[in-house]
Structures are given as C-alpha cells and as structure tokens.
Amino acid sequence: MAYSEKLIDHYENPRNIGSLDKGAEDVGTGLVGAPACGDVMKLQIKVGADGLIEDAKFKTFGCGSAIASSSLVTEWVKGKTIDEAETIKNTDIAKHLALPPVKIHCSVLAEDAIKAAIADYRAKASKKDEPQAAE
Amino acid sequence: MTAIAQIRRNDQPIYLDYQATTPLDPRVLEAMMPYFTYKFGNPGSRSHSYGWEAEEGVEKARGQVAKLIGADEKEVIFTSGATESNNLAIKGVAEFYKDRRNHIVTTVTEHKCVLDTCRHLEQQGFDVTYLPVQKNGLVDLEQLRAAVTDKTVLVSIMAVNNEIGVIQPLAEIGAICREKGAFFHTDAAQAAGKIALDVEAMNIDLMSISGHKIYGPKGIGALYVRRRPRVRLVAMIVGGGQERGFRSGTLPTPLCVGLGEAAEICSNEMAAEAERLTKLRDRMLKGLNAKLPEIYVNGDLDRRIPGNLNISFAHVEGESLMMGIKNLSVSSGSACTSASLEPSYVLRALGVEEEMAHTSLRIGLGRFTTEHEVDTAVDELAHQVTKLRAMSPLWEMSQEGIDIKSIEWAAH
Image 1 (spheres, rainbow over the protein chains, first blue to last red):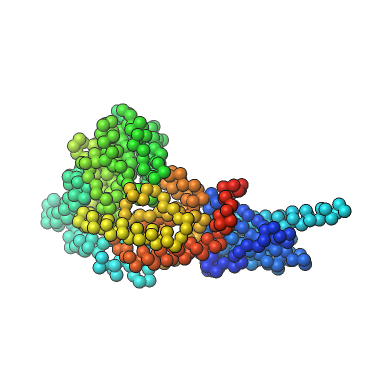
Image 2 (tube, rainbow over the protein chains, first blue to last red):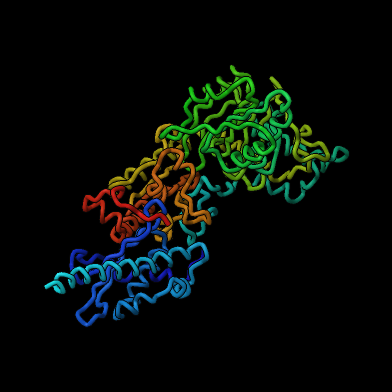
C-alpha cells in the first residue's frame, strides 16, 4: 500500500506525543477505539483561560494511518476554541493525508477522539460551575 | 551461500518472509535455462528428439520430487502449484468416492485454499468437520480419532502451518486414517524440503507440494497420489490425458525441471540447513528477548520448522510496526494490511486474544538469511517497538498497572 508523503511524515515524526494530567480541570481526555479492533487513540486537550486550546497531546495504538490521523488533529486543534475544534471533520483528515479507502475508519476515530476530549472537558467545566451556581 | 549477491541487490530490504515465497536458487535457474532455450520440445512429443529430450528432463524432475518425500516417481504429478494440488486432491477424492463416503475432516488452521475447497464441497452436499487446534497450534489426536467415522473419505491436515510454522504429528494422523480406512491428504507446501517427509512411514495418501516455497520457480507444484493402495481422483482439468489423466495440459518443462532441481537440493542440504536456521532463529529470539519485554511466540516453539517465528509484540500494532521497519520485509498477523480488518484466523484459533493478534509479525528465515541480517533485524525491531510503545496508550496503561480488559471499549 502506497501512502502519501504527509501521512508518512506524520507517522515518522509524530507531533505532540505524550500525556497531560487527566485529573486537571482544564484538561479534556478522549479515549476511543478498542484494542480488539486494532485501534486505540487517546487524545487530550488543555484549554486556556481565554477559551483557546493551548496544548494537545496524543498516544495511539494502531496502524500508520491511525497514528498519522491523531498526530494531525493535535496540530489542527491547537489555537482553536473548542467550538471550532468540534467542527473538524473526518473527511478533512482523510483528504489531507490522502487515506486509502480501507483506512477511512482511522480518520473517523480521530474525529471521535477530539469530540470525546471536548465532551470530557465540558463535563468537567459544568461540574465546576454547578456548586458555584448553588451558592 | 555464495549466491547472496545474486539474490538480493544492496538497495533492497532484508528479506524475512520465506513462508510467503522464496527466491529461486541460482542453481535451479541454471538447470532450467536449457529448457527455456534449445531444449524447448513438448515432453508429449514422441516422434522426435526434441520431445524425448524434454521428456527426459521432466521425468528426471519427477524422480527428484519423489525422492524428497519417499515416493515412487510414478506417484508424482505436476500441477500449477499447491493451491491446485489441494483443490485436485480434495475435490478429486470427494467426487470419486461420493457414493460410498461423503465426509471430510480438516482443521480450522488450514490454508485458505483448503478451507475454501471444503466450503465449496459443503455447498455440494458433503459433510465437513473442522477440527479446532490446541493452544500450541497442533491437532488433538483423540479429537481427530473421534471425528473420523466410517463415512469419512478424506482427512486433510496440513504438515506445517504457513503462519506459525508448527509441524502436525503426521505419522500419528496417518496411522489413525489408515486404521479407519480414510485417505490422508496433507498440504506440505511449507513442509517439503524443510523437514523429513516419508509418505510410507507416515501413511500419507496424497501430498501437495509447491515449487516457490522450496527455492524453485513459481507456477509449478506437485501432487503425490498413492498407487498402492490406489487412490482414485476425478480430474478437474481434462484434455490430452497427461499426468496419468489426473491433470491434462502440456507440461511446462522448464518449471518441472526447476521444481525437480529445487527438490534435489533440499534432499541434499536439508539436514545442514535446518541446523543453520535453528541457530539463526534462536539467535534472533534471544536477541529480541534481551532487548524487549512482553514479546510472545505464537505456536509451539519446539514442534516447528526452523525458519519461522511468529511473535506478538504486546501493545504495538503490527502494521505500524511494519511501516517502521523499512529495511525488513516481514508479514503481519494483524488485519490492517488486508481489506478484511479481521486479525489472523490462525492466531485466533490458538486462542490468541484479538488485541494480541493485532500485534503479531511473521518472520521467515531461509537459505539466504545471514547472521548479519538477523542482527540487523533484531536492532531494527527493538528500536521500532520501543518507539511505538512510547506512543501507545495501551503500553502506558499496562505500565501504570491498569488492566486493559477492565476498560469498557466501544467496538467500532
């Protein structure tokens, strides 16, 4: 299978590998996929006081396309608001990396990972707000 | 092993996929050349020297193949490869004896061409029993004995598995078949030339052989068909009645000669070669174990051909690993290289968990593999596995002591 240069670059030089403190209030964590299916992505975002995503990290168990897709989205989400990050579509990822048809699910998983990280961040944020509102 | 320069150019990756195919041995090519050029006659031509010369080449080759497996040369027929041999053996026997016996026994880890042939026969009304294998990849002989009935016409069990290299207990299987009056067919594509085979001692009635797995040419194989007691087959390809009527069509003389020469070389060098490859394989496994924790060999390590390793590198997906080891040509038990996305059915049959099956590589060593290549492969694999584990969320969890099975994963 011949892969695009962009994909190979992200596989060989993945951006933003690592982990953020998943207990921190300003960090949202998405863990998607399943080991039995051969793909697991962990994507984390750190949201600044200004509402912009100031850092993003990932770890991925999966094929080269899965690694490249998650590396790419960590680059894309940085500097965006969470509402903007939420609009990233799997088709954009697939197109950018020129994923072959059998690898489209990798881009779907990457989109799911951002959405899950954002949902986790929002859940933490609303919990933080609740007791304050009750006062 | 002087021929290495002719086998691999310097700019090519190290070839470690000898179960997929093998390079043609230069000595085999040399034997074939005259039959591509001036000895071009049709071996079926009886009326002139061109035909006699070609026939002589073909018959010598038949004898060489027979010698490799302890058969008589009259019992060997040439086919296009092991897939055709398997098809002919299974369909041919099933069809011929269908009025008396209509049951076939095989195993779940057979090559696709055997499984697909059996499925095809099931659609035609035959009964097929697919025996499971044990954790080490070997068939349970008591289960086999229980499965063979007076309706069983054929037991088809591979000699050596193509993914995990394990050797089935052929002599014991042959004895059970003989006792029960069923024919014993074995797909020996991965076994011939690698381990000693004897159709008499092992009570084998039909055996499939492939040319390109034994450093011979692609497009040729053989089927051994026992003459005493006689095994009868319905031919699939009919026409001029060549090959005792089992397989019509003009024989590809150069390919037959190549298969024969390849078999002859194996007969002569098998013992020394097995010893050399066992050392190389042990060296590779020792090297990997020294550099990497949590790697697991799939399939029995002792009852295995010397040139095969199938290893799960826990928490690293197989295809991403293959992408990283650019200088090594291996194959993966992970599904991500194929369109199906299902991990290897062979590993699954051993009870290897799906997530572990996704992390497996098949490493095949062979006649032209050198110690230097093995050492290079160990270094590259260790480097890449370590790199990918550093970016694997599963590795991170396992290091933190989190049981991956305790997490509710959403299957996708």
